[in-house]
Length: 226
Ligand SMILES: *Cc1c(COP(=O)(O)O)cnc(C)c1O
Image 1 (spheres, protein in one colour):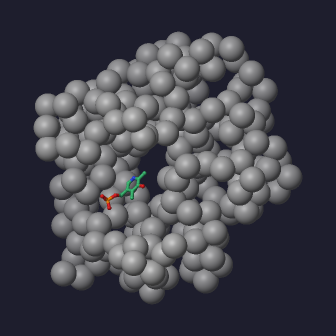
Image 2 (cartoon, rainbow, N blue to C red):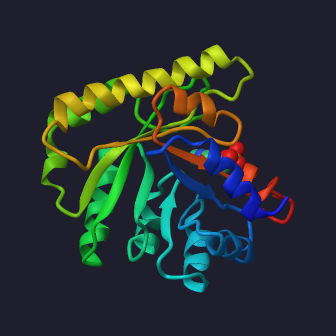
Image 3 (spheres, rainbow, N blue to C red):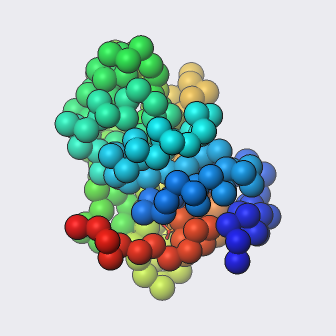
């Protein structure tokens, strides 16, 4: 199947108001261009250098989202162009993104990554850590970032009930944070959840942004990476 067909098939299953982020990690710029030509404008990558190299050779109106683990010493590489950094898991990361955004006279949207899965390996805040950070309020001083919502990944399991429960928990945290800390803000509105294998469950639980890679671009080949 062609990328274009995959995009329209997936878009057709998404309710209005759900944003499709095309996860292009490991795939060459030509495949991203193909999706771009079919109308897709939002792409996500999880390696800063790879995203930066692609951003230089692809159309400038692409909205790049970073979905990898945020390493503080690499933020400056993407600060000049990145639109959204989705996986922010500490106040320190937020502060550094703010500092780098200011250096480049930019504004960067950040999503708070919440650890909702039972798996040990997923990065992010626990809901308690996130609540404590928001309660402390220092983030309100950061003028070059906007906290635009939350992001989460469910456990990689066939147990749909568990996956749905984790997505619902993310939605519940979002609603609570919205009410407590962002009531006056229209910017805090995104719940980024759902990948190729579980996005329908995520949308049903309230996600309004899905991050889909393999169902658009096919399986990833990691064999030439180190
Ligand atoms: C790779 C990745 C995705 C996309 O996964 P697919 O299963 O290929 O759709 C979504 N979110 C994150 C954070 C990822 O790293």
